[in-house]
Image (cartoon, rainbow, N blue to C red; front, side, top):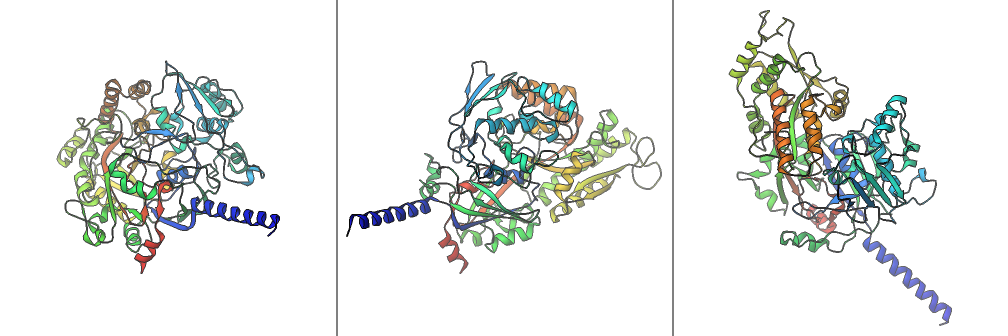
Length: 601
């Protein structure tokens, strides 16, 4: 054999070895994870989007600088695309963040064939999008009022109708290709947790230029640096993600916790992601969603509360029929609150005078929250006592702002403030004699029809007329932001351990964006501004408590429930660990395809 032949053979062997090595560590396209969303998405722009289900997708397409360690409990923030945690000056006002080199965006025509590296400027651009008034970003609170020099640029954008993305902002600069420098007006102790969210993820300016609409939104063409990219999307029906072939070397984290031993043993050393394809079905009705799981058409599922006793026995024990299949049960209290907001600008239920407060409080007293939890939620919740849920900083277990069910008291309160039946039709009227009609928004699912029935039953009992606005959830969100809804029952969940995301829902300057109730109370806003400048401390907790007491006093919300969550996971899903702050940890999972195939026989 000649030297040339030996060289050719050696090259062939090396090529085969490299191919096998790459394949062994790459996401397997034959591994397809099937999951479901109970609510339709709105779109995949991290700065424009805001609903939880769109953000579950955004956070695996786009990269934030920091993330929560997947396995650590209590939760711990660690670098993601950043090289390290921020370097923060002694006064807390200057932050230096280094972006890791060698990270690249997914290939896209917007880059004109070039391989596009992630830089500090991409984060600066994304954060300017959050500030851009035209964007109407619900994440505006992350940077609003914090960055030195930003207010001037924002004011100019409001005056001219166009945000100048090239205008220098002293407090937000990419001082070189890999370094972000923030200069803050005051120390922002919640900012680090905000930098773990999809809303602060990097976006390429070329992509926005290529695909942005009149508002600058890029909802249908997400291009990020994360572990997955959008493969197919049928609005409100199906979302398909595929593994990003250019994703950097990220490996399953290790843990010293004995409780994680099984998960770590099966995943140790594996490059992420392992699963090549995620197929997300939008299944709004409870029965089809649970049935799809039972038929092995879904690999894991959050159990619909109205069907909880189909899977659990008393004592919250998994039924034998599920346990025999090796299905894993995970349960926890969501860092979320369910509430009903009143539009404070509505002529019927809005306003800050005593008679309007009395009407809202009477509605809250008349509604049977205890029955909602017992019957509709099948006991899978507890009464909400304040805007901040458990698991989040600022929650005070001693604080109770829950309005107890008291129809007799509601009637007496309505009578006292002149909400009586003036025309003899059996329904109460406004104090001026005009008809009093409540309207509440509601999606068209079977569970929501149960809520409708309870609302009607509760209001009928005290002589209040109520009607229902029935639309799909994304349409209701648009109407709500436009101030077109009088009342709406909905929930908000946190992706961080900080409380500000909940109080932001009532902060006056966010009216019509996150503050759907359009609650504008200077005293509340002042407390919010003071709390933003404090670290997690007894002093800040006292401010949170005062804010919660104002919510109870003025009643822009009817506090409903803190929800329990129950997740079922088939045994062929590897690497799963329950996380109340991330219901869909797709990049950390793997599939035992052989075991799934055997179970199907």
